[in-house]
Image (cartoon, rainbow, N blue to C red; front, side, top):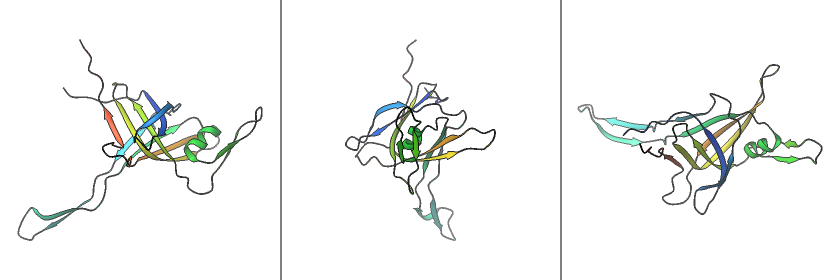
Length: 172
């Protein structure tokens, strides 16, 4: 029976366990702005060399890897969220507001993600590079946090960086 995966139900973020290659300690990612979560998968680049006398290639060489990226936009631009997804530090002592201190240069951030779809299916990203970027469009715009997720090798044999889990079949 075909499995149809659709809709967005929830997203969770967690730490990467470098020993097992799996994500752990997941917490809710917060409000994802509608219609901003997406996945794109590029195609591998294949170079084909043909003979003048044949229709089939005599040699095909894969010259590039296909890349997979996920993007979503969060409504929460709190100091804690900025530090989590963009790096930097949070300072401030209650009752004063927290302050986010932007890092110098590019920060190396790795996380795990779990997305649940309305169809019941799940998608796990066991290990990914994460890049956060702030956006604000001025007078009538809302500040937001754009999160780019690029799955990377888990470093553990037989543990995939991205796993799709079908919905549990319903018993009728």
